[in-house]
Length: 128
Image 1 (cartoon, rainbow, N blue to C red):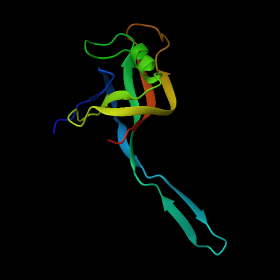
Image 2 (cartoon, rainbow, N blue to C red):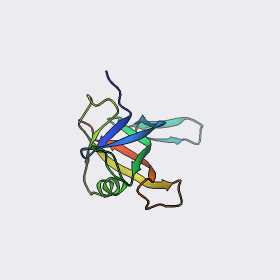
Image 3 (cartoon, rainbow, N blue to C red):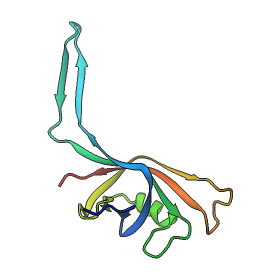
């Protein structure tokens, strides 16, 4: 299985920051501790995958890659997004943006053509 150094969101490629974009699992449930010290734990019927971390989005991307503006536009859509993880054979998946979208620029010329943005995000994968 080939692993890419990018993911795809809405048909555009975005480079991932090494070691900073990974899959996690959410196991929904509720818990409480009773007065006698015992635990009452109830689990939801299903677990959910979440891809989270940092991706790179330049102002002026290479062919096939998306720009920061295209990425932010896609992330603000009020619907599920088409998503391919690093392993492009396990897609397309439907992903929903959850939580904060954090944008970082490490150069003072934020609008310069050579600037790269680093975007922290969380993508909740819709169960199939």
